[in-house]
Image (tube, rainbow, N blue to C red; front, top):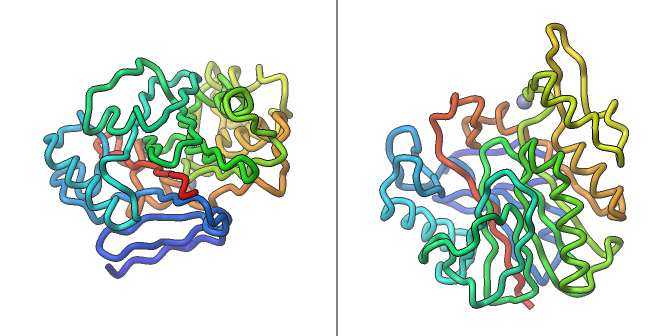
Length: 278
Ligand SMILES: [Zn+2]
């Protein structure tokens, strides 16, 4: 496939089914991760061609075929996938081998799980995006991992902080041992919000919100979701040098990535994948 990506910190891999990886996470030998694109699947119509969400118009078999293509391309076991249940809340769900297939090959059991964490190498975490913020967590000491979905609601509900806390409670993770990656997400360049939404960002006590909001005329603001999550991770004790932020805006790169805003909601959905190898 003749596509390229202009990023300083991410690399496009895969051949007929491309996916993005973080260079910083590729350097960690005990994990495997991937972020899908909108390319290299079998969906037709508005979801053409890589859509990983059920319920966006694709029939079930088409979505499952897309999962198989992603698994073959990026090296995940299809049966090991465990999907999140994203309702724009901030609940973190620990999963294990017993949760393989959840929400993908099997019925959903959790009612709210915008973040998934595990220290079990027999399950692959899967979370979903189309402009919202993906957060990747890797504990380089205990070999535990997490994935979180942070739209603006999840961001201001501090799902980033909740995930650090949950990894500490379940796995003994220390924040200073975490390597985190943020994005690809809609950038401040393209993410306009209204006053009511902006006030939710301003109410965050832990961080300097003047850095994450830019006031426009007419009561509108530009908001930096990635930076907000980065500052929240720092407030939870993650080292700045251990946090990488993707330089790809989903809306500016809407030929490669699904963007809810670029498509006015007529779109497929991307997924982040991560598993522990040892
Ligand atoms: Zn942009």
